[in-house]
Image (cartoon, rainbow, N blue to C red; front, side, top):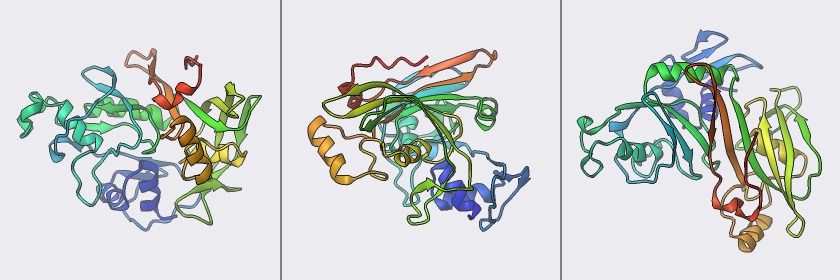
Length: 302
């Protein structure tokens, strides 16, 4: 697999944006800086991708609801809604993205944010990435020191992430799925369980079952971080996530939409746990969207 393609998928950015990261020496493979877009990955290399700062003055301020979970001088944690694009795309659309919403949020005078001097924070770093159609806690660093501290924990897998997933049909017991994941051989836009590739491990636990609707609510924890990991593992055991248009049947999803008014992929990162600056364990909790109201569970994960 080409390195620029890997970076684009891992960071959920366009290929040209990935090539820019390579050009600016932001990608290491087995501790060596690689700048070549066409560099070919083999298997199980250690890949580290450093982020460039997002410059708020490059975005056009857009008034947007920013659901803040936590904020201090170094860190901003959001409950990111589904279907919101983080960065402007290559086509140059500078409005309607999370970055343009943050430009408005960080303005000293939101109604007149026109210059760099109007911003309380000029640069931010997205500490981690997520699928566009998944809602969850999104951590944003306000300075390079904060980025290095928290991103190191992501690189060393010192972050616990708990999800909610609503799936078709009943699951009655805990599951531990260990199945390698890589790009699908039949559809390059999808991922699949592919033997002898990158290991992936996911824990599932049923917490509520709606018998009439034949839907199970799961608590999910990922122990490895592969692209689309939860969605691919659940599909592999024939319990796909409701409203997952990529990995499940369009007609069944449409039926669920008409019956329950579910318009969102029912996968949500409920809680993240990470070491704080004083090395105490910190929890960030993100309330799920309204689609999960069909369940009675109060969504406390511990």
